[in-house]
Amino acid sequence: QKEVEQNSGPLSVPEGAIASLNCTYSDRGSQSFFWYRQYSGKSPELIMFIYSNGDKEDGRFTAQLNKASQYVSLLIRDSQPSDSATYLCAVNPYNFNKFYFGSGTKLNVKP
Amino acid sequence: SAVISQKPSRDICQRGTSLTIQCQVDSQVTMMFWYRQQPGQSLTLIATANQGSEATYESGFVIDKFPISRPNLTFSTLTVSNMSPEDSSIYLCSVDGAGVTYNEQFFGPGTRLTVL
Image (cartoon, rainbow over all chains, first blue to last red):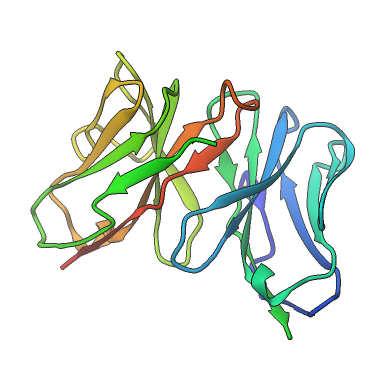
């Protein structure tokens, strides 16, 4: 069983719509959760992190965490073509230093 | 966040040779990490490098194949030894955000390696 699972996509949404990206994880002891954006040919860029159950908003981005369901999601409001990228979910379990990455979801925002 | 640079940015190497990748950070960091990202795949942690101690390798990665140095708090190297085409990948270093915000990781630009 993979530690972190994501739908590989591609997820296609029209410009201006809400994009919803989902991630599940297997380790109930996981403490912190991260969303990275990776443009083709570039390295991952941290866009959001969340530690507590509930929602965390930052601009057009909202991270949602439900530890009981072992589920974390990223919502992108008013999606733009520049949001087209692969979004990686990362989970930091009880081990402070070790991240587990999902396989990523490719998002396409169509003008 | 820290500014991280890697050298080389890309290289094409012959089978059986070795390549050393450098990672430089503009501030002192406790933890540095080396990842591999094979084409179309996600990131796989190779090892964690602490200054003044041996690197900690993940399952499937060994020191003889991927020796790592961490001589100070701003620099690390990863060597890919006795390369084969299966080593063709992007190699990324990352650093923890300790002291800035809690335990995020920030990535360098990566080294794109092709082994012929």
